[in-house]
Image 1 (cartoon, rainbow, N blue to C red):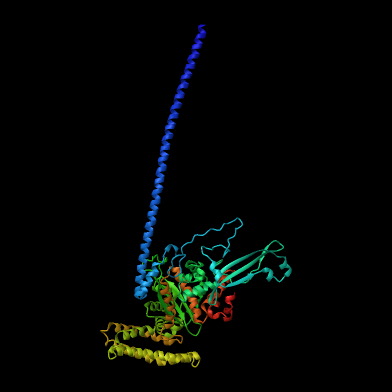
Image 2 (cartoon, rainbow, N blue to C red):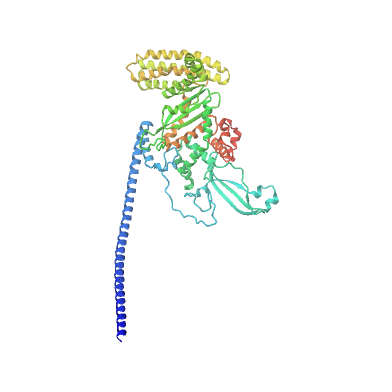
Length: 640
């Protein structure tokens, strides 16, 4: 009995111990659960605090971004105002605009948006016009069947954000490409199953007016279940899938480069057709740059042709480039981004030609680059010292070779012998018109109302002697051109009669210096004439030269007029594109070829070459010079 009781007590004790352990464990579990709940509450509070902080940070960021945008807009406004101020100063000092012209210019500039970030889009070699406001439009629904990008105008679809309904007001030139009608195998043609008609519409230009070209292509399915169509041999567009044909692009470019109508004005003129939004300045600009790139090889070959002649002309004129990335300048840094268009031209026994290029400054290194490799010619230019330095360097290089072969005496003789320089070096020729202009200014500005003064007598006598040189030129030149006298006789007769006049002009001018020692302007003009008289007389050595450089001066006037209308170029690339196109178009005019017709021909032919496997180095680009193209071939260009 006792033994059983002890065992029961042991079991009870054991159970109580287990109950105690379980109770302690349960208490710990409750404590842990309470701790977890407290941690969760703390974490929730922390999360809510973090979310509130994040929302506040987002609000602060949005506010900061708004502040930045407002400040950027303010800075952009200030910058444009500074640009306008600088350009007004430049226009007043360099372009000599009147007050009325300056007021008109300020109004135009106030509308101008100059955005350096868009230089690639607005590089139109001119002041950019305000961008057209984007219009809200419905996006077409694209179904899975529309895998291929459809180019050109589609029925009921607004293309590139511009309404093309104005096409409907133009006369249509319909080009039908129907394989069923063109195929000579009638059985094959009858077996074709019509699938669909593709239609493409472009702005076209043909001899004096715009029109709409509609290209209809009928697509069939043949017996082998293949899609087939007929393609006419049309000239390929140099802008693939573009909105304009080569003819329309040529017309726009000629209007800008030759007839001085800026691209943004042309865009407005084209869009006046029915009030449409067919083109804008950026679209025309892209065609302008692409066309310049397309004709680059002909432009480069043209320089080689000019430099191979016996007598050429040189000149340069300023061109403001507001975003010249080559020098790192900005539009606000007026003067530092004032680049120069350098010109080289030829008029003589061969076909006349004009070449232009753009350099960032007027430094001598650019003249050396332009005239590198020249020899055996006469270069006529104004009194800019860079031309003299370039000619001297080129002649010294030739003299150094002679010095190494034949000694110093032979080299010095070479530098003094005009005939040898014409054969192996370069003869620098001055321009008497520049000297005459200074004398004439003194006469008209000071002495015109003082006929008894010494100044009047001096100016009148010098102008009279210069006039004798022109009279001699006008007397002998027609006889030479008509074949009445040959080239050598023309040179001999002109030298015989002109040299005494030049010597008298020099002697008389030297004698009048002391008379006008207190007249600063007239003395400066007399010194200019004396300093250049030895260069001016060099024109007598070549039958292809005249007393002045007016041939080149008249050619460069085209870009000066266009510069006034466009005011400036947007970038280095735009200015260079301008000069490339001007070179070819001006050369076409010199050879009595319609520049629009010529440019369209070039774009047609060169684009065809580019699509072939012929390499540039294998093409004789001289065949595309205006004088080498048959006129009958040019007459058919509009229909190609």
